[in-house]
Amino acid sequence: MPRIVSLLPSGTEWVYALGFEDSLAGVTFECDFPAGVRTRHPVVVHGLPTEGLPPGEIDAMVRARVEAGEPLYTLDTDALARIAPDVVVTQDLCRVCALPADDVASAIDLVGCPSQLVTLDPHRLGDVLDGAVALAAAVGVEDSGRRLRGELSARLDRVADRLRGLRSPRVLVLEWTDPPFLAGHWVPDMVAAAGGEAVLADPGGRSVTTTWPALGGLDPDVVVVAPCGFGLDAAMQHGRAVLDRLPDAAAVWAVDAGALVTRPGPRTVDGVEALAYALHPEAFDPPPAGRVARLRP
Picture 1: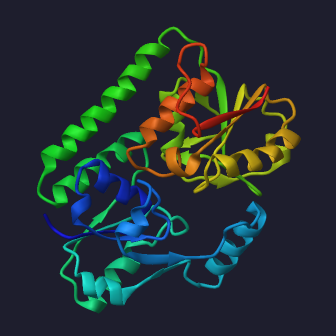
Picture 2 (picture 1 turned 90 degrees about the vertical axis):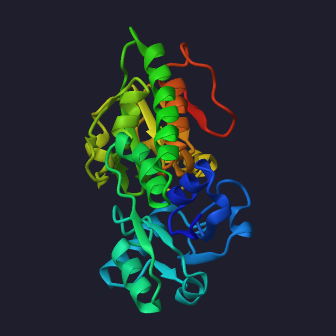
């Protein structure tokens, strides 16, 4: 099995889901699943110190660095050269979310690694699941990827079966709260797969900023607070702004977005199952603790 370096958390999760973990030779500072992954594999990408900062300060820091042309991530090229990976998993979807593929390609050329780049750039939910096939194909076992994709698709089919005949609530998903960001990419598809109608969302498009006054008259049935890259505790904290700013929303839920929604890996299916419970608690069993929490009513 070739040596693999994963430069994004979702790539690391695909490596483990496919059973390739013994070939994993490098990860990022954000890789946190399975537990202890950063102690088992060298960390080759580092990022900004944002722990403990409120959402508005994080947004301002990122915008300032982007406008100044300063990097958000640092690749340890010395470590990359020592590892000499055969396969490097990267992305070009979002320069804020992870190290972009063009930077990685330049680094590989610089250190002289004859690595194959696997670039995961999902826009729709189906594209997310295709990540299993793309990675497995790169290491020469495409059938394993197709089998995993089929298993994940079957779980989505079981959710769809239980949704038949149920009303689809209007759902607003916020990927950030200061400023508010509307969900894009695969997230509207997740809402649809969970039995909802995503409002003010562009399936397959980018997440975009809006304003609280623009959201004031929307009157959704459900608001899902899913701050990009953050877990359930942080989502619940971000949700306080929603409770204050959207007092007419009938239901407000927080979700572990960093694991289940904004990270396009195998656990997006866990995210669909958790959202299905939030939107239709009468039809679905509660998901494991730590995935979603009701903030209102």
